[in-house]
Length: 151
Image 1 (cartoon, rainbow, N blue to C red):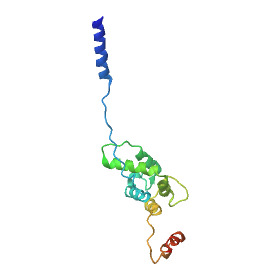
Image 2 (image 1 turned 135 degrees about the vertical axis):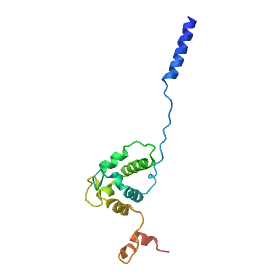
Image 3 (image 1 turned 180 degrees about the vertical axis):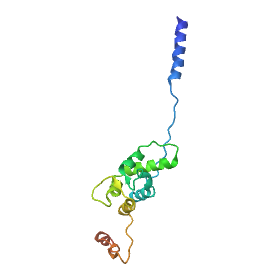
Image 4 (image 1 turned 135 degrees about the horizontal axis):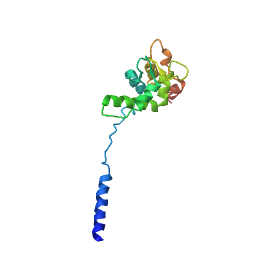
């Protein structure tokens, strides 16, 4: 009986090693777009606009952005960057709103070639440049003017 017991243990022991799958670490690169401002993200979208256009369409679409965002990350650095860009754009509703509505009232899922630049300008946190054609941009707002009063 002791021999059968030892044999049973060795079969169980060897079977337990055979059933364990090897541990594989999955590496996920950090999203280079996560730290960008909304305006900078819209500019990156503009630089990569063609990646978000369905074949034969002059426009980028929300559907294509979602399609790119759903792709798994692979060893292809350029494809990974586009995937991460799409994911970050979808995370930021204010960016999607500007990309999709900057030239029309309401979202329609169609992003014209000019929309990303217009969206970046609207999302920009850089104050407008003063010029002779826009002198109102050079005047401080009442809130800023009040804070400049020296006592």
